[in-house]
Image 1 (cartoon, rainbow, N blue to C red):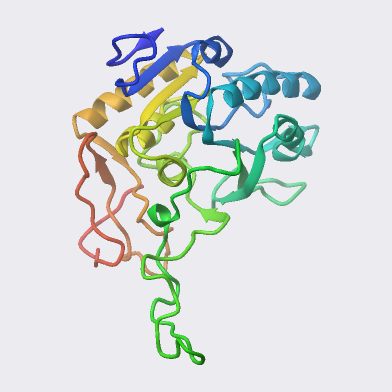
Image 2 (cartoon, rainbow, N blue to C red):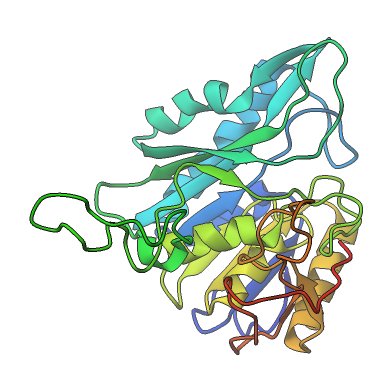
Length: 315
């Protein structure tokens, strides 16, 4: 096992474990009920450089093996977030969230949300409408689970809206902390000019995982990504004083993940901040600069409602 700042194989005081190898080698070593959140995006069986294309039934069987172990290591108050797109065969799509749902249900998990992640850029289709969303299946292990909604509220669309009748007439009708972000999230994907882009062809944006980490864990909890790639889940967890475990079969990705963590420790890692709105060409000045991550501290970052005309964003 390749470990970073770890004194024993599963020392609960450590904050980061990376394993160079298949998740099915790592997961059996993790104790039962050890992690509060499992969040990952497994291979979609498309024949990418990091996967071997399988028959769909074989792929689903392989996924089940990993999911069963993830359920075993999950805390009773924990969550699993399985982010998937479509398997494509001869131009026909198979939504992986639909075909994987029976596996989770058969293991006794409870589906809380089918979160739609919408993004504006992707491959252009010519024989069907271009795909611009993927899905996060959020399951919990029990009916008693960690969920911190206030930590992920977003600005109200109409913050000055008031009740116009009844006992609360004249009072503001929205929550002063912001609104529930709903189950449709518009977050840019990591394309070629994204500030977070690395060598990985299908990379998570940090802010997508931040929202899951903040809402479904508490400080000090362990977060597991069994297909960790270039370490985005670890970054999102460590930024917010959680602990991270992950595995990947591609050594180059693990090295990139370690380098990103090192940059974050040195205060040099740049990410797209959660507070940045999606780019509006009609209001290019309404933007927020990249956030510089400094592990162990709360990095200085402009608030959502400040003026940002002085910044030129290249992303």
